[in-house]
Length: 347
Image (tube, rainbow, N blue to C red; front, side, top):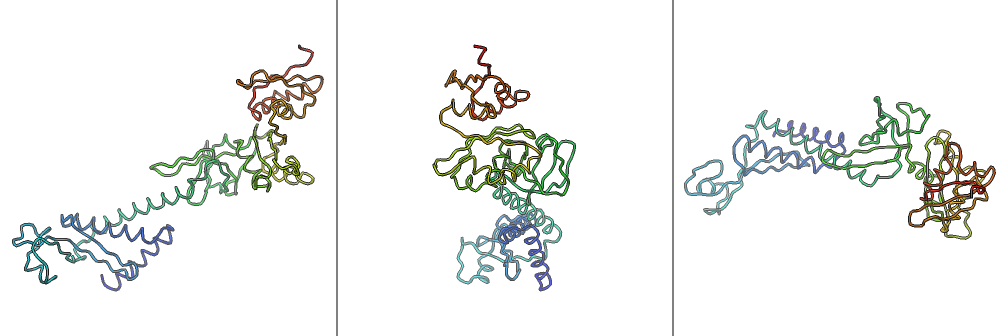
């Protein structure tokens, strides 16, 4: 290669590296493989090798030939006489590395080189994306709403896009194209075709991650989030506790004058959150979960089947059930018990 070609090659190489953000050695390796592939296609010699100097841009293409007395295949063999002109101490049966001319490759070489390099770049990009997102299952991400179709929003997450189905947004909320949006990774698949990321703002994990983001005690483990139950867009219940006697877990979540919980509520389009105290005693926990109902008598029907009976009187009966049964449904999800609510007078 002449000095102009070297300069052009180095410039093109740097542009690929900057544009794709991949390691220079990956591109160099791809170029070397591309030139070897072109050499094999052009000459039929399978014993090719290419060296690209990433500092100078010089390309050296060579073939390996066996030293023989009589040459039967010029692609694979070289006479002892010709070999000694290159390496004087060479002997019969040995292999010699012989430089090949680059100028004979033309458009065939360029085409093959381009194909191989493009493929390697795609593979490198896919590997980079897989490495970046492999640990993002059940995590909260921030992206930009880039486009939409009839059923989905597509969220730009940087190196790739995630799919946010329209039935996985918070009911009643309106999302604007180009705006920043927090999303929960509900499904992550890494396969041969790359990374598939399914997103949600409706999943109960979305509320969980928002709380962890806003409440330091959840992040450092001094307050533990036992479970979350959610009716997206309407109400969530969360159960918390602490193993430290000097920490009020409910107070830590709510914050002074409700400042902490309010920061979370602002991101939930009017959804409310009930903060419940978890208790190891299932009867106490179920009674707490049925809040705002009070003085509810709990009987565990079956520990094995996780069934319980809640008995309440007056207004507490209606409060325990909730509008359209919402309160008892959320309490059941929160406690993992199937709860039946009855009036005490029914017995």
